[in-house]
Length: 153
Image 1 (cartoon, helix red, strand yellow):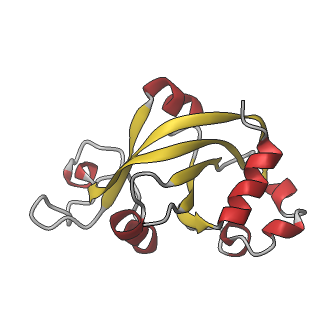
Image 2 (cartoon, rainbow, N blue to C red):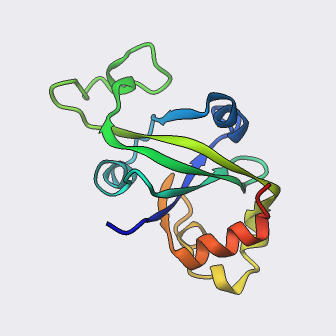
């Protein structure tokens, strides 16, 4: 299976790239959109690469991560004390899935959403055409462009 490339969004006040660097490996949980869930369940595989995107006030790609575990049931959905419970999901009938990712490289500088809008090579990028999805594929060319702009350290 060829390596795939993804963009994962997170509100930095909820879980930031610094948190991932501190944790090393983390569960990418709490996704509650069926299209994004399908990607996590069916398509995101170990060995794939992730652009870590901070949404919110200053939206930008801030670093890269690698997928270390493919899709498995998101147990936070059936935990009423979690930040994002969905009690229709159960261990016997999970609705939501997550993957595990590992921090790789922080960018020397964030690649902002505004900057990406002005890069012709990114004109068709899903982030710019369908921005609401929290887990979305990126092409190898888009990956290479953003990594080159961010200059990982």
